[in-house]
Image (cartoon, rainbow, N blue to C red; front, side, top):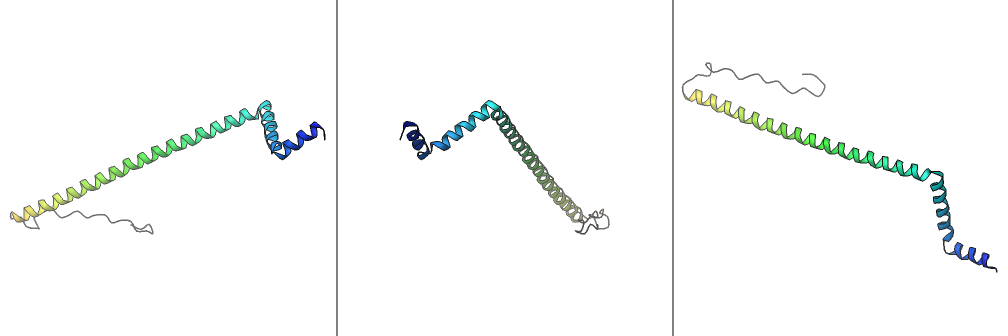
Length: 117
């Protein structure tokens, strides 16, 4: 067996054929410019991912602010309702009749699921 056959046998047996193929493919991509295009494409994908994460963070922050606003409004509404109720009670305890007090406002009901109000 000559030296060339021995070298090919050793490279093939040791998995060097796959490594050599990967090396050749890499060199072809490098010299043809497709490696650079792929790198730019991957960078663009990373930028898109980072922008999506930033947008999601902004949306979560906006949702948190809206939830805090709704909670604050609900607390203030309950405090105002409680105050109005206590004020009416104080008025009746000091001699006003129910007819002399303003009537409670008529509250709107929640819309039904089928769209009727």
